[in-house]
Image (cartoon, rainbow, N blue to C red; front, top):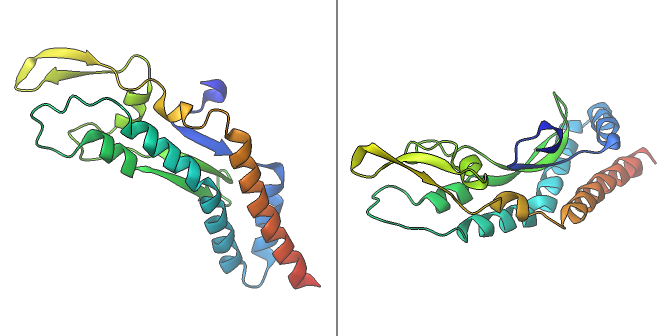
Length: 170
């Protein structure tokens, strides 16, 4: 975990983003400009989210006699691009959110991604526990070799907004 980041987020920040956010706030209709910038940045990261969803759906399933919602599908639904402009941090990332109310396993995205896996009781026998492993680093590997592409797409969205602001000044 380089930099102390959780293994299930991809964060892309840029030193110019804070100054761009300040310029947006100074605009008369900065609220709409910020909304448009966030939308464009999310669109830039959507291919990464789709790749991560595809990766988790490729995880082996031993279905069994479960009557609850499918785990892989539930995890895939919770993967989405996130953009924040201002506040504690400004940036864009693809994040796997917790899976609340899914088999009592809210940390499913994080646990299925790590090498050590997770422990759970055997279905129908609460006294016997087993160790289970998911698809190793399914989230991380979905972005390997493509980090620069997503960073470039986010920076292009920022540049487009800067051009929009500059054209309003002229």
